[in-house]
Length: 335
Image (cartoon, rainbow, N blue to C red; front, side, top):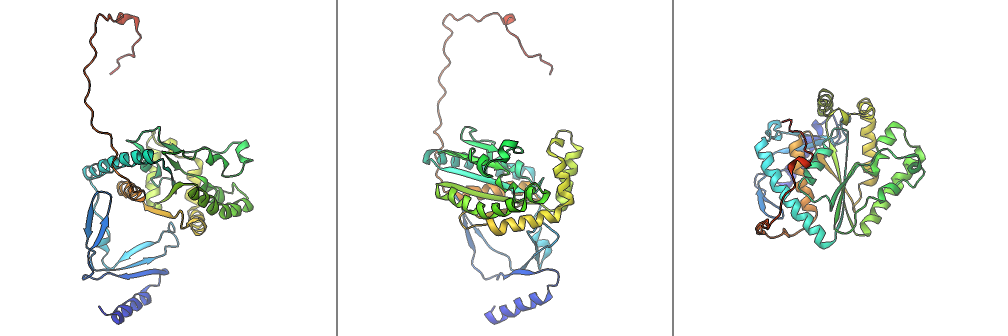
């Protein structure tokens, strides 16, 4: 397609769009060469299908926009089976173990922030990341409401105590961005405190990066319909009701306010040294796999998995006499 015809096509698309602001229009040609996507273990050739994609801002949504394709059906991914999901997750978790060993060996300090709306899938992703890792070197930090004493401290002070030492990874299940989200929307901070946060946060994070910390920030984006479904599932399941709070219920009635707060937060804190990475999380399985895969790509690593060992034979009894079983107290065998 000639440049003149391509420009004409773009002009026609812009003229048709009346529901939102077009932020990007891209034409993919069938003759375009395959794009090589490189990971730590494999190089995969991906051939893009010829289609025109429009990305349109969705004023009533999550601020992440919606994607409309000329062929709507091609934009829909088939449901990932549990078997496929568990297979891919297993491979990624093995790579996460390798990454942890590399971080330990090199003395890296890694901070990973997980933010997003309630029920967006942050906790489930964190659980899958840490499931096979050594908790001595990888820990999750989810701070409760600040105490009266902490409220008088410098805002970032209580988070600093949880930053990693050499060889450690810390995953923040919500973080200092509470001030730009729930505190802003629910009125828990003054306008002056909010403004100071937006000024200080980028500099605070640049300081962390200059000190040698690898800072990675994820925003989990969920639609209003999917959030409602997950909230209802938590209400129906007694084992999950603890995940709901009056604050979660209030967030449903302030959906647009949270969208605006998120947009403003991105405006000031999506910095070059620590950009935001958005994870589309309506499909939990794909969101987890995509996030873990991306995390692995952010830190180049090598395989330092300990070599396989041979189990030595058990020590012989050599006259050892076990005390009577009746002297011990056992857990009742109910099952």
